[in-house]
Length: 457
Image (tube, rainbow, N blue to C red):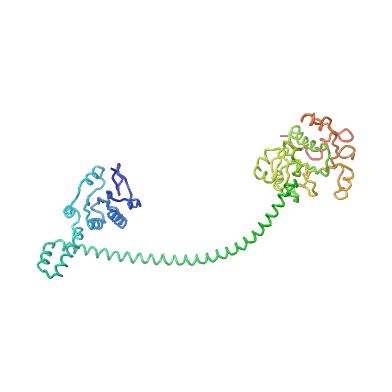
């Protein structure tokens, strides 16, 4: 069976430190405690050994003869009639075999008297002797009293030493108590100061709590309003209307815009083939001009089901969940909410050209600035006349069908459009010319929008 050992690490034993709380849980067992000459934790050893004894353990005490604790601990052991006490000069010689031998023997009171500390034995016997002598005095039996005095003369003489030692402990204990009392008073004063500060802090917290309660009431009202607004937005979403109906124009000068050219097509009315043309314009600038191009199409939610496949169609929520990929890795997006954060992030990204096709039919522009080149997509001269009174539109900056204005950019019919390959459609748009049949419309747009000076990648 493994040996419980305190005070020295020996291979083959269950080793504990005197501070180990597990010691108090040991009951009906054997524990060997080694106290070396340098040990100073008298209270800790005394309390631990007493607990072990009260838990009906056999305590084998091995103590260095130069230890300051020898008298205290030995008296404790004999007080509980435990005589497994061994005083040694050098505990370093101890090994598991020595411990096994000590466990296997049972020392007697005489051994303790002879080899350990006779004062400790006197302390143990004194109570019994005094009880017998008191009984003899009460009975008036002087013969028994004299007999006891003679028989236990040595013990009574030793008891004087014990009482003197106890007085010494009391005197020193009183000094320790005075020191401790002073420390406790200082601690109490500190705690009182902390309590005052805590009381002030508590009042501050109470005031803050009252403020927060008022704030909470305000927030609850705002939450109620927000829920009502959310229901309204959900109804708009289900109806196909854009959730963000009003927005502020993003100024490129107010963000760190990296694009050299922003081509902005604002649709007033539908013009056939314009969507296809703008898509192919982005491809031409990317593949032929070797530029990094981003195409953004803004449209209402009810329009994207079939027209824009397979282009990614995103809302604000979808953008937030995958912003980095949508900004940096995908060259074409359909956006159904004019969220200012989306366009700002894309303006700050690494693109040479950004093409925006605004189909929201709102008066407010999505973006403006010195590097923004705006074209109006208008189907008829009648619509142009109405808008020109308000916006003073240059006809050179109009995208329309053939025959409307000679100076505007005409998007001609693409014959056999559905039969054309993607490459074939691109070739058609590259050859498509102005009304005079001379200049390609792609060249006209590139000249005006500062595309040509941009270095190829």
